[in-house]
Length: 237
Image (cartoon, rainbow, N blue to C red; front, side, top):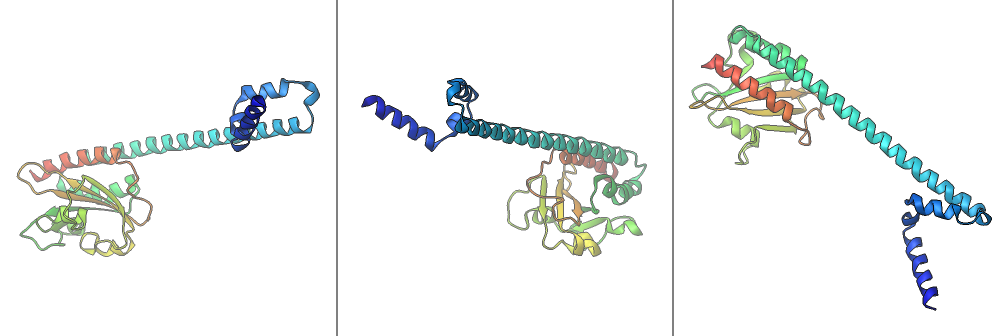
């Protein structure tokens, strides 16, 4: 009676979780090799289930392999983009050249639609350009005191992170100008411009809603912004 109860208990456990048997190659092999006289329809079906499980696992491994390769390729491509952008900034011969690189070269190199630089200038009219006269005048935008932190946190009073990635329902026309209506996501970077200087704001705007989102990594962008900060400090010193 005790043996019968144990067998029934084992049977119930296997039926409640067949994977205990099907996922164990040694147990399957033992069942298949136990007795040739029992290799009927049920054993063939059991073998087909095992083959199906193995095919499923192989398919999952192949999908994972492709995802890893795609991620590695994207990382290498992103690294090359950032290196190229850094070299372009360092090649600028003067501040006007630096701003030209920012407005003309960086969007193409980094695959964004617009780049803007905001500087806190309490004495200037917020939203007005601070760059040289001409086409670059709207590249460097005046912001009120504490405007950088307020913009990054949307006025919530939280300490701003260095880099904030987000999607936008409505972009700021003061910062993006006429392009604001098309901007759907952005990377907002708080710039440290040195002691006794107000912080700056570097914006990368994209017309694609999924170009920037909070689940993305920021290591490469952090490195680029470190180079950008140091180069900008040289021109505004």
